[in-house]
Image 1 (cartoon, rainbow, N blue to C red):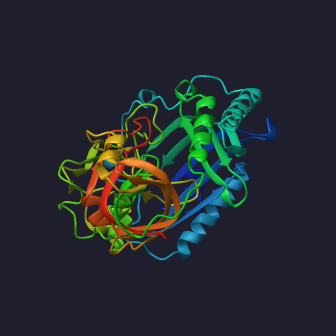
Image 2 (cartoon, helix red, strand yellow):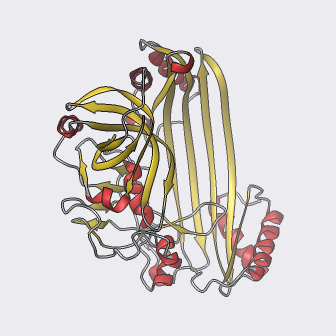
Length: 448
């Protein structure tokens, strides 16, 4: 049996070549995970798991197939490769499929500089239980909180190895620490729920469990007495907790796979203005201790800092090799992939230009309108950008929070919304998506 991830990845490639693959790439992932749930001050659930998974993509000419398994015996690798090759032979031709040329591959990087691994040892279950219990107790101490739906603490350590027949080979390890708490305030039909949590690569950066629980409880209690607001056109302030979704819709529309299909409202907007002049969106894949940091993408290309939107102007698409070939462009090193699938375009760390005003300033200046703190469901037309989502939050009157609201729908058109957007200065800079609260003028609200 192979013992190292390197051996295992190379064994997969060798098995694929023996089975008749023209080219191939492999991914191996191994890791350990702990999750502790507490309820009523007592241990509700404890899980610890260790696993090794392998994935293989093979190409026969312009036909490709992907397979995955958690069985890593040598004889299983041969069977896996044979099945992948058999599947590829029956797959339809894809003229854009293929590995990177050797000259395109990243050749040097400093993975240690990204600080993706906390050197601290794996925590004892008792320590995770203590954190979950502390978060629960802090939430229950908030006046109005009736119960805690869930209080969780966890830890993950995962190592990924990639190898391909074009000569690329690389690996990285990542740790994750997290605490989350979901509190319920009120009783009967008047119950309201909200949550808080934090996830960091290094334990030293994690917020205290007490703070997380207290904030979850306060958020739930603040929602008591929610009602439906009036129907009409009002300014809407997307709280920093959920404002990333707006930028996510923009980046999703700039995704090369959608552009290649023509299924995006941005299809004719390359080189045109999509945000106000003062705003840019930078992709920054080399930020230390951030979840979306990578020196190379899922196809072995070197990642780079770039402006996807510069001074309001859309400068480029989010491309992997296949979408770039289809569009007659060069990959932007944005290929992402999982164990069992082919690469797909996706962004790394992104940051929107922050504004000069605070969230409180925007609330004061918006007069009457809506502060959205959570959303459910979505109806978004990818071709037109028409946008409609269920929302809840707080009603603003005379520049102050007046009362909580729920059971409403907000609607508009993404292109128009983004062009009328004003950012606050409250983005959390440790997140992979650094997006502040965003004020959008003139949205349609459907309420009472």
